[in-house]
Image (cartoon, rainbow, N blue to C red; front, side, top):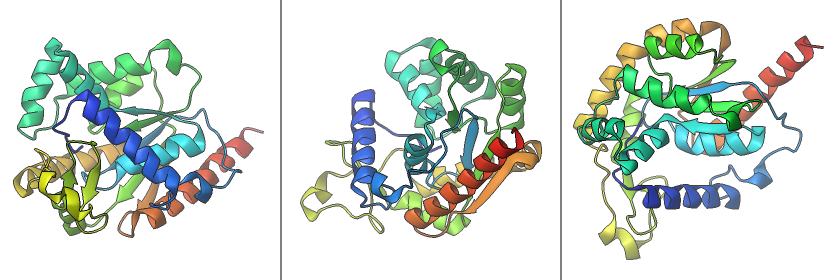
Length: 256
């Protein structure tokens, strides 16, 4: 999970810009790119991968194309921080230091969200949770079942490069990548490096991710859909979309 050093207003703006970019087709993930035959699902999915694998952009397209309700652990925690709740104040300190959030905090936040009335009967796309075996077990204990895990597998060197190349426009909230999605020259001077997009913090997060990954992958091994995340994002999403559609169609047929 990459932590954004911005408030809710900027976060909303970033999401709007992300959606506009995707819908325009400039990133290859717009509505014109998508087949109308994609199955809407009430299954619950987990989008899983290392920091910098592209979960944020991927989740926007998956939510739209498969009729899912996207629940981001990062967004929920940022909301707690903005509201300055007791949990939010604890989260803020950890975020600023580039640490992941302890299980007991994130479990309470996310499970509270998935148990809300407006989630019932919806297919859910979880992003950034669960990321540890304890979190997965707590989620299962709450009665919430994960039907499939989409695992975006990216080379570690590429992950680091992606994180270090990111820049935030504090005016619009848009995230640019100096290499793959460069900003206009006119705004270069105002761009910021996000608080967690440093080599040291990225390597710290990767160390934690590698430690947690093995047990979580073992826990969900029967429902993992693995995708090569090294190609450009449009190509990765093509593979994700095709594999997920095939998985959902097979599940539907098995119930007939």
